[in-house]
Length: 240
Image (cartoon, rainbow, N blue to C red):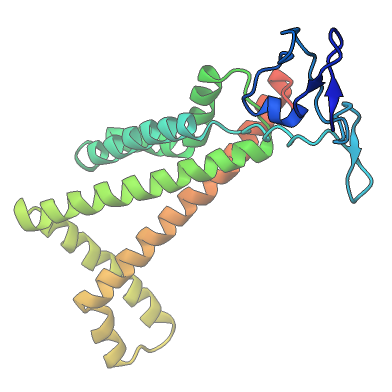
């Protein structure tokens, strides 16, 4: 499209050619020229568009959903509580006075972790659901650290220190008492007695008992976390 200069009336170069690097002045008299953009393209009016579902949209993505749980902070609290529980369990093996303290600590592990979590994050969301999920994390850490610590301790005691003889004797006597009690009610075949008295059966019995204890710790941690989260929701008035 050809345009003329507003001062001298001379022909001006193409507008698009001028926007590509040519001078925006009249080549005849040097008067500055006002260049307008192509108004055939639609302009943004700032009006909200409507998506396919009929809901109004501004064209921008919604903000991300805030993280309801600070997992790194909860993990640090769970590791601290689990390490203390493992230390108390090791002490209880040599000092019976620590047995009750270790048991209470393990049972209240979720409540302790929630207290540490809310002390560091007082404005974080807290309810029964959040408490149960943090309790699950605490239970997993407790099971993992307790299993690793006790397994390593038993291996050291048996193969390095060789002080498991009294434990084996007590275990054999306890199982013999159970077998005698069972035999008093009904006859036990000789092959079953030989199997019960074997080392493999004792090992399997110990592993199954230990697994049930760890599973109970996991369930107690989840339940304790849910109860603790519910109580702290009422106390602090938090909402999810």
